[in-house]
Image (tube, rainbow, N blue to C red; front, side):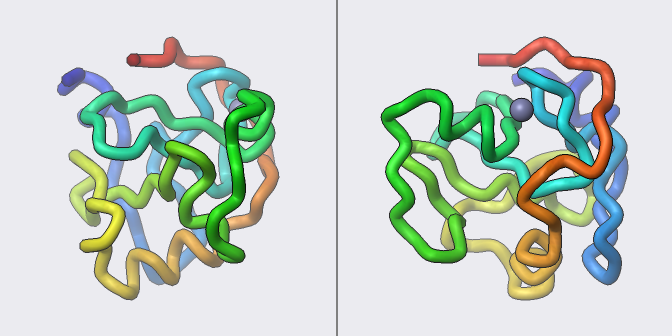
Length: 115
Ligand SMILES: [Zn+2]
């Protein structure tokens, strides 16, 4: 896995809707919004809602959209060095993610998707 990406992710602050520095969609650069990551992989392939859904195979399996197809909510640990497991995220981290908007508030430079 890419340590360099984790270094640049920054630190999560669950008390706000601030997102870590590196928390942006790797396809379109969407930032300031909910992001998903592939389920059960170590690949750091963060994607926004439009990019996840355009895959076509995505089916919404949960009304809070914690999982979409093979993608799950990307919830960084407070150190920002990795992501919580789908079922092991602490509640304050889940609450933080739930407060994020579904769509980008701004765009960052597109980073290369790590797959
Ligand atoms: Zn995107």
